[in-house]
Image (cartoon, rainbow, N blue to C red):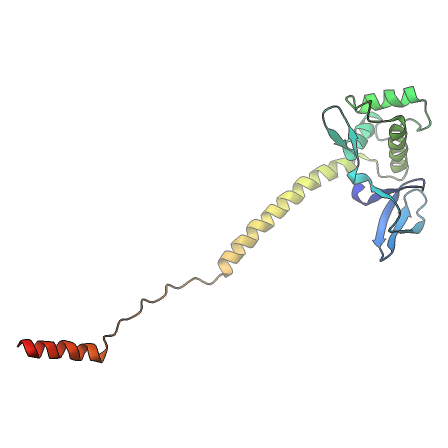
Length: 188
């Protein structure tokens, strides 16, 4: 599941995918209806990929929470987001047992359930969507590492071998030879 292109826009119901960027904003597509719309740069936009849920010891990325929900509900629709607060809290405890009850509000849980169900109806929630994301991250890291090693090897082969600079040859100047010869004549 690619959450990095799925956004929530403040004041607009539903979820959207980013289609393209413009000078004055973005073109987005509603994941439910497929209708495209233009939004301005001043709109408050949240990337689902940047959202995390508080637990008592850490923040869990939304992707992992969605995966937990999908596995619990067998990749089918979850409970209704209009369920009672007690039902929503019980749901949240079942998919993320150590969620921080003081910092995760009922409205947050409703939004999570609503988003999950929208993604499920739009066909984003399926077993291979979660497996591929995890495996592709590992594969991408391995590919980057292999390319780095290949580039270093290619650069090493392509680099010309540095030749050792020749030692400067010392030539005796003719005046030095003359001085040596003249001193030898005087002594002899």
